[in-house]
Image (cartoon, rainbow, N blue to C red):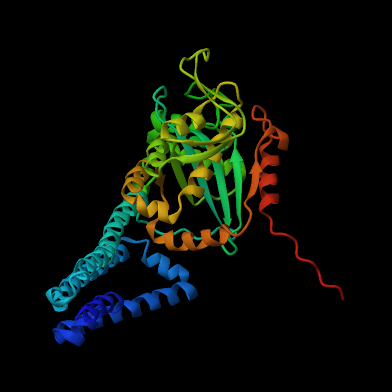
Amino acid sequence: MTTRAWWLVVLNFVLPGSAQVLAGNRRLGRFGLGATLTLVVLAITAGAGYLFWPEVVLTVFTNSIGLWAAAAVFAFYAITWLVLTINTLSLINLIKAAPGARPLIAAFSAALMVIVCGTAGYGAFVATSASGFLSSVFVAGPSEPPVDGRYNILLLGGDAGADRDGLRPDSISVVSIDASTGQATTISLPRNLEDVPFSKGSALGKLYPKGYGSIDGCDVSACMLNSIYTEAELKRSFLYPDAVAQGSNPGIQATLEAAQGITGLTIQYFVLIDMQGFSDLIDALGGVDIDVKNRVPVHTDETFTKVLFWFEPGMQHMDGYHALWFARSRHGTSDYDRMQRQTQMQEALLAQASPANVLAKFQGVAAAGTRVVKTDVPQGMLGYFVNLAAKTKKLPVISVPMIPENGVDPENPDYAAISAMVAAALAPPPTATPAP
């Protein structure tokens, strides 16, 4: 009877339903076996689909309907396995097993039940939470086709500090991705660019036909690239009446038009990362490891005379509070250093957000993520972009920083030269002509 008990427990775990077919209610056993084999077939089908058509599978599991269907499947199997395990315990008849084996059999059965049913239940919880998270971050809208074979995305690092009137993007980049190969090129734009041109048809560009603030000044304290967001959002929102309905806002839309005017590219989507919300996201993930290159001070006063603490060179594990200060500190370094630290923080956070870490802390990550990320990327495009990102990770990212070392003077920029520099960076490599 002891050997029989162990066999039934193991069979219930390896092939749920088989224990009932052999020693109990065969109708229940056949139902359990059918459900188990169906799950195996679904898993094999999903694996084969991901191998040959990854974009299709990723699309299914990055939309609300697919995630709710997955949650229903997980919940069904959690209940099914719970019923089968409890029924198996009744079939074991522990009283007839050896006295020393009884607690071991009971504990082993309970542990397996918790592991299997708990995993399925947690899977249902994550699927429903992911559905809510994706629906709150990504919009429902039409997909945009690539332009000249590329997707161009405006990436904004917003700094909405307590000492500021509204949000101001201090980190502005355009990420251009080859729609076929996944090759990504990052074009970093200094926040202090002056006389910024706008793309054709821009509402704010009609006020500044020769560049932002080049004629009569602008309606903010400084006529620089990152001031465009503030002016459009707080003072010129009437120029962009449809921005909110399209999942954007006037500040983002005006900044996007300025980025198009600078680079000469057509930008399909934007992603705004709020640095203020980074603190919660980093805490949710358990902190972030940063390699501090140079000593960075943190001041507590507007005159930058009182140092609260220093970030010393070397590897440091930072919580959200310190990570945010590391990204925002500006005294004693240039804007370009600050941009580099913010980029370093974003890259470190993405590198350390492993699937296991995110799944283990998903609720906190999802809650923080809705406060960190704003984008107009439609949810229906997620499968495509996730598949494209897998190709991107295999290739080195090309960087095109618009800095003085590359001949870019923020106070007197040559936008024709900048546009030519971008075009040259994105031009496909020449193909060798075969010899006759």
